[in-house]
Figure 1 (tube, one colour):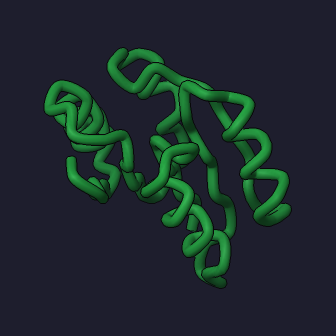
Figure 2 (cartoon, rainbow, N blue to C red; figure 1 turned 120 degrees about the vertical axis):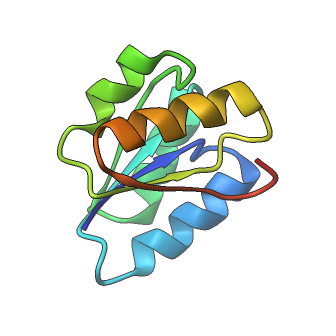
Length: 104
């Protein structure tokens, strides 16, 4: 399974990344954050199946570019309702399962 983790460099996102990287059913984990340095470091530290990407998840075009070939999305972006709406609407349009984690 190919998973896109949004907000990967934050507190909740890091915890989710560690757990997802351990799972045998996750073949590829893409760590997305606006803080690209932390996302790169995290991907390198976790597993060869991790890679990183930078995106502004509030912009539907940037988000839709990342959704190509994705099986599921987990969002740890945080409690900003406008981001959640954009993320969930973009995933629904592509028929991709999505979940928000944390306070969102």
